[in-house]
Image (cartoon, rainbow, N blue to C red):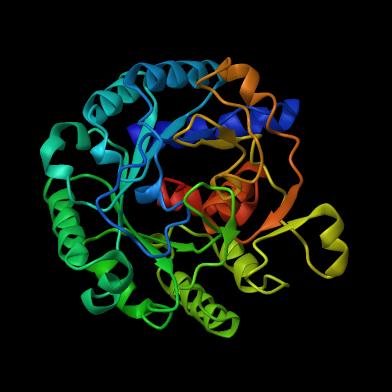
Length: 352
């Protein structure tokens, strides 16, 4: 009954926003720490190299309070590795005590140290990129075994769980094996695609050396669509979202399309962007961005130095008009009341 009520509440929230043409956050992602015990070669912000201090517990509480007043329904705690934040259990409990949905993305190494708080999470997304010989190439030796142990721990404790697999050149042909891992641990499968990788100072954006070729990526996405049709409740990503990524008109090294660039592709129908309108991301340095993809692209307002609400109302007017990043596009589809995406979220019960 609780999950049903959360779905109804979220649906009514979206309808209200559409009817009154009001922008209010449904979800806020907070990078609570840059610390990470792994050195994933494709990490989009090279978190383990950055020098940002953790966002303090009190600042996180203040941010959560402000976004709750704005109408947020879900808080996602991300990193770095979020379970390396010294107050992660307090933060989870604070969000949940505010009657908000709370989720996280983790490499799985440290869950057992605060399992009571973990049990309160609505979803724990564990990063696994394929079988051991594939996963450990980019994520590090031993990371597969620790991720699998985390999935087992979550399953044994009845915690909603998902497998987050980032498609890159090493696992682009391992879609079936990744699917089998999700089935084995009764987890939802959530694929991600690579996007620009930051230099250590965050000032330079490059294409990751792990980026697969366009043909291989389209083939992988076609395979995922095929599996989604056969197993609709196993995947977070809707068919509409997956097809948008598969049919991305420019090369995948062009991560975004801006208004003037859309003219190059007259037959492409972009999915409207709601970044900065119904969701946003706070980087570890406090800067509030419309979405995770845009971290470091401009001097965003900083919620550690200014009022959170003021910052929120200053990020909607960005220039990005289309992308293929699956997580953001799924939120865009839900926010635009796309029938396929709404049906998908009702079946799955969550957007991540």
